[in-house]
Length: 166
View 1 (cartoon, one colour):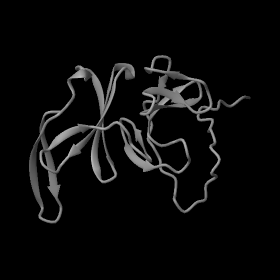
View 2 (tube, rainbow, N blue to C red; view 1 turned 30 degrees about the vertical axis):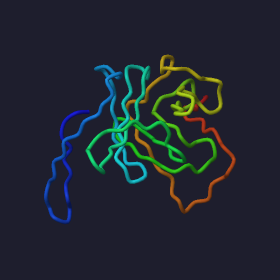
View 3 (cartoon, rainbow, N blue to C red; view 1 turned 45 degrees about the vertical axis):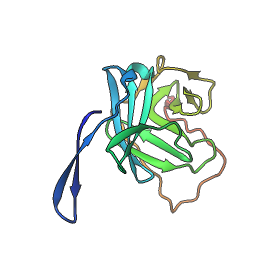
């Protein structure tokens, strides 16, 4: 992503412009892109057609305004969609270092595992290098649960697409 990044300073009520470079050339021309803040850093996630390639970048603001490739999210996970994106620290073991998308394989939500570089689901044996055979939810958003409510440490697969039977 070459170009300028505009940052608004709320205290000084001014705009700052920064030249930014560093988009990896291997992505090609057609891709989906997402911006998200994680661990206090601006991150960009690029996904080529049907997830054949995924690239996670972090903006290095120290010396040069430059995008640097991220190989691991540590204890964090990203939730990305066209309308909303956010990062969260893992709550349940096994959910970390993954990127969650509003896509389903059968009734299971699809995620991208940075460790294995594969798309997978919890609750099924789905595991592949791209998103073929999955369905995208177009009109959706992510919701964060309240931190005030207790949770079960046991992983639970929600039946997101449960069909009602008459």
